[in-house]
Image (tube, rainbow, N blue to C red; front, side):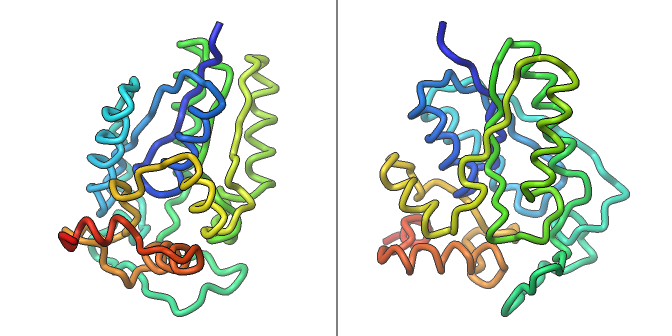
Length: 220
């Protein structure tokens, strides 16, 4: 019997790479896509497009967090543009409890379809101060699964990789980066100035190739 996996798919570079990684490991992949009021709703359509291209099962889960003051969801707050992010500083783009909420849905879904794996695109290198992207957090969630005695494992294959290493892995896996969406702003084209855009640009520059998503959005 083929192993089943639930993939938390945002449509971004990281989660799409992880999806292709799980597919390369011969998992039958089922994607969960979350609409939590994020400004960059384009990532939802992007995730759906990628799942459809691969002919995978997917569900879009709508969540309301009206109390949240993250700049990703609060229209009164601007997306920050940091020159550097100091270790220990949590950017306003952090959404409190987001990954815990996502994982709760993923665990429920995995138990229902009898999946034995959850794949996450979390990364502790780029945003090491996000408290729900750390090795400590992931281990705590693995302990939750042990307590549930459901034999589901959490995999975070790019957890300790740099953006450059992630892109190199994705290129080997033939990830269609031209269709991924990384920008935190809800603009038609990537803004190029938010933290996420700059980290992505740095990664492609270090790999030595142009970002195919930028070329696509500019019509080149």
